[in-house]
Image (cartoon, rainbow, N blue to C red; front, side, top):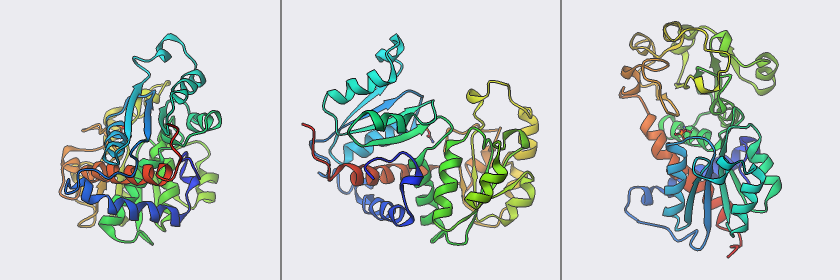
Length: 310
Ligand code: CP
């Protein structure tokens, strides 16, 4: 596939290949080798219609360490703020002669839509509540390095599942890697129709976090996304933390050595306590490091063989 729009684009062997290449990028990441020439002469635009710290900067670093020219364009400060349509914006930047487009947008399906308008590889850096495939790949890569194979491992994904593209991509990739997934949320943040979906996709659901944590081999806490909640947030923040926060007391119920993941940005004190975020078994910053290696790998696989448009 010449795009990465969804984890659906990848079979398990593709994911393993991305991980193998990501591991080979570590010499660059350790700065023992400054840059690889693989994408010299290629130009990539990071087109972000939603805010980002990790994804945009790690795509930029990844592209630059592969010797690509990387340009960042945010909706704020672009002509999108003057009313230019998404299609016109995308056709405009593509007409400049780019080789790849990394896109984040608030609308689910935006990356897929863009891939139908233009003729260069499109990488989905998060589209609404739909998918965030490179986040799931970096999460799977972090877990594989920490746990070895994920075959038969039990991953609990906890939090605001309704609004989480990270959850949707991770369910797909972790089950492709052989893990068992339990999705935990309060009823108000459990996606509608999850019963049929979980049966079809092969994951379990639970409302009782305390019953799940002692059985987990890894715990992935997700951010409460208030910016996507037009109807208000229920339960209250206090009730949420009591029922679903990874508090100091809950940390003690995990098996020793259980890795704690969070894609960031974290709401410290809401879904994750400082004790958990900063615990020895927190791999939050390992996820960030893995993000660069995995995005180098993705850019390499999608763009290294492409003809340049220059
Ligand atoms: N995890 C993640 O996508 O973070 P950013 O929104 O900072 O890119």
